[in-house]
Image (cartoon, rainbow, N blue to C red):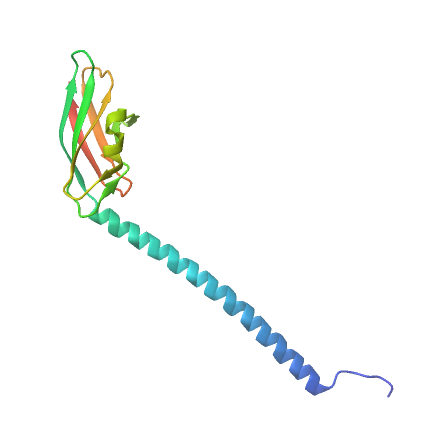
Length: 145
């Protein structure tokens, strides 16, 4: 009869307190996870909308093989958003733009036209010229020299 134990009332209060604390932890974890998923989905949807609105067209490609060997690419923004960070590829190789046109390649407004060029020697044959923007717009052009 000298044994002491926790009274039933105190044990019920302890069990309820533990259950409430566990529920609060689960709720906090779930809302944090849900918020992260919503932000990720929102960013993905925003990129998809910008990508759908971004479009460009290569209207002309010229190669001047006499003397200085310049490749001139004329690009038009035919989408509804400003295109940024234009890069030019030839046969899947990145071309370094000439210093005079790097500033123009950074931003191309809606319905804007820019001329991208670099100084390079190109061998005779068929080449694929590709221009890509940060927004996902891209255009290709087949150049025969």
